[in-house]
Image (cartoon, rainbow, N blue to C red; front, side, top):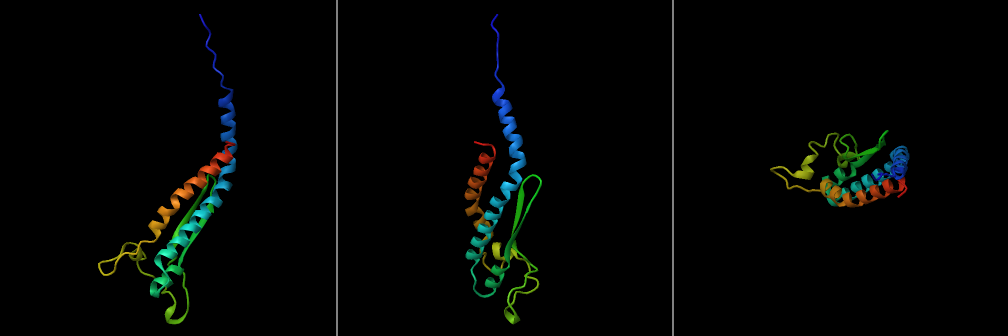
Length: 139
């Protein structure tokens, strides 16, 4: 009877690469997340414009990001607490339902900006994330 032999040495090497990548990836992913968040923020501001009340609204759009034990996250959008400008031209303390700008109301047309900015950035973000992952795996 013939003997069946299976070489699993490559599986062990891959397991070692994955173990190493798991320790490297969280700190390597955060810059990718931050760059994506910055791009989305800037694109959303361009899409909403800086005229009139919307200009004050655009100035409140920002992002926060944080590295976690397993990766990173970012939150992008208007900060309801941020006040911009002074006198009658400053943003109000409460910008009401900020979703009105994105989706509109029965009295005002929508002005999509966050959703389209996210969609525009997604392919670039995915490509950058893939590059970081392949580098961490040594591929």
